Structures are given as C-alpha cells and as structure tokens.
Length: 220
Image (cartoon, rainbow, N blue to C red; front, top):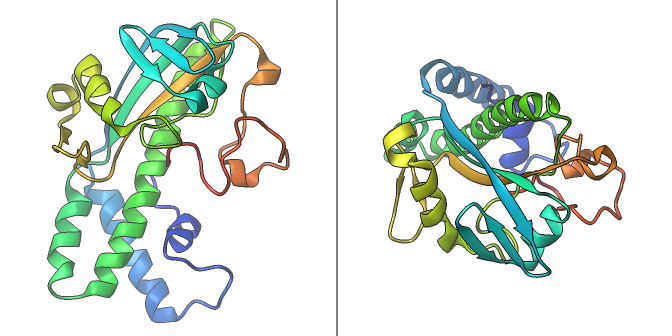
C-alpha cells in the first residue's frame, strides 16, 4: 500500500500548477505517516453470477441495476470485495481538524490514495487467482456508483462478514467506518478481449468502451 503522491495531488485538485515546497513537504510527511501506521485488511469471496438486462444476481444477492448489468454482461462468476486501511487516517483527520485544516485536507487526499493503492493490490491477487483458471477481470464497480444503490452495502457486509473479519462498520446511512474503506463487485469473464487491463479509465484511450467511467477507477 502506498499513498501515491501524484494521486494525492489529484485528490487535492492540483492540475499541473506549481507545487509550493511547504505543501510538498506536508504531503510527503503525512503520506509517510499513513503508510507506516495504517493497518490494511481485506476480504473477498467468489460467487455464481447471473445477469439480465437490468438485474444481477451474485450468490444470494439480488440487484436491480442497469449499469452493473452492463459491467457484468457475460460473466458467470463475480467477486465481492471489501477493504480498508484502518482507523489511522480518520484519527489524523480528527486531530488536524481542530488545529490545522490544511493538514486535515491533505490527510483526506493521501488516505484516498492509500485505499485506492491497497484495493489495486487486492485486485491483483484476485486477478492472479482468476488467471490460473483462465478467467479475466472486469473493472471493479462499487455501490453508490450509477444506479447500483448504496443500500446494497448492507448485503455485502452480511455476505462477507466485514465487521467481524476486517473491522469495518456500517452507519445507518450505509457509509463505512473507518471511512477509508471500499466495497466492490468484480466480474470474472472467460473472454480476455472483454476484460479490462487498465488501472484507471482515465488512462485508457478507448473512449467508446461500454465499461468506461470518466476520470476515476470504477467505484473509487
């Protein structure tokens, strides 16, 4: 897991402008603290997957979502995934929110870069395991994106036992605590040409891809 400095700057809204040395030093210090003190954990499980036009069934989970159905079209298996980097980012944000809002903002950005990096690592493990069976990955897709309702967080939490296994709780509003946590669905396909090998849609030149999400990795 790494708080990628370029990703941290992107989350901070930097788009090529000159970076002041004081800000660069702050980012480096906070990123290093997060990398050293975070406690990343994950859990994932593979299930049968059935897809209709606007409906997806993953194991016992029934989802009404056209966007997710498009993402998983042709997949007979899918992975439910949950990951977190732990409480360090939230504790740092709370501390700096009362003393230094600039640092709190940098922690938010670096924490987002950390969880993205960690989920990429977990996805690489899923990709390796799937590849041994001749399967390829679709872009990961999270509750709350498109018409994939955030309410399904509850179902994913129950199926993966997230609180018990990785210490992530769900609020009444279906937000995760610690906040730097992610749930996602990853489709598995036998057709390599229908899989995605890019880390982020924003890096891909295939602008007509039906799985494309502008600017971000799916779900993050």
